[in-house]
Image (cartoon, rainbow, N blue to C red; front, side, top):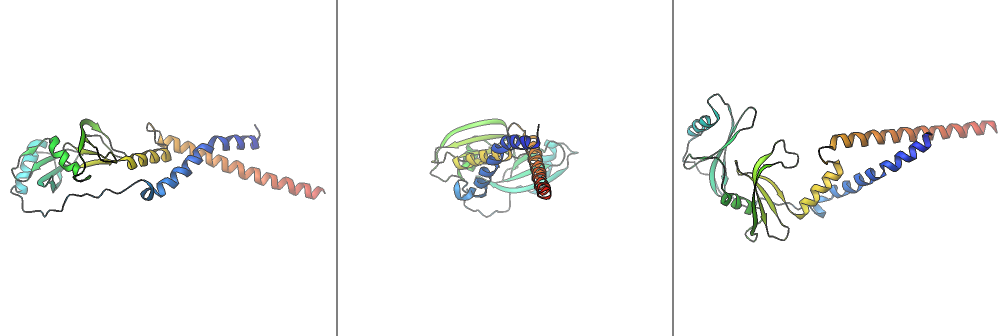
Length: 234
């Protein structure tokens, strides 16, 4: 196959990918203006007070659950649904976490759906009503390193907001609405991230563009050399 024919066919094959990268790149660059609206945490700020349960008791109950040889890596005092809790994270494989009620010292294996709804409502305001609650045993947010057990809470607000709340920690793992769902699809198309093939697809695309460029340079230099030869012969 001649270099010029190969260059033409390769350019046609890569055209769709280049166009996709260009369009999705423009969309991502202007996401906040077009479709990705920030959702600030709307829970009214509440000042933390000294918890009834001391940090020593938190370490004791945590080691009873994790085991005496487990090393505690982080203890965080936080408010969930206006109530204080300790979030305890252990070092090592498995990323063990534990929620402890800072008022009673009670271990919370997982938050209940009512608390999850209260946490989720802080992102939609009082006008949002719950349309559906679903338990998902293993939900993996985009770019997350591990799957988590979550509550999926869908609201009937105009943007159909979804909030995914971790059943173990009460953290909001992901917040979606119409604009954000569209934005995730844009990101997937831009990164060719389908079925975990992003790295392979982007590698092949990069190699194809390199080949297209090198063949194009060769054709350009070859054409210039031919013109120079013709001028000398004249």
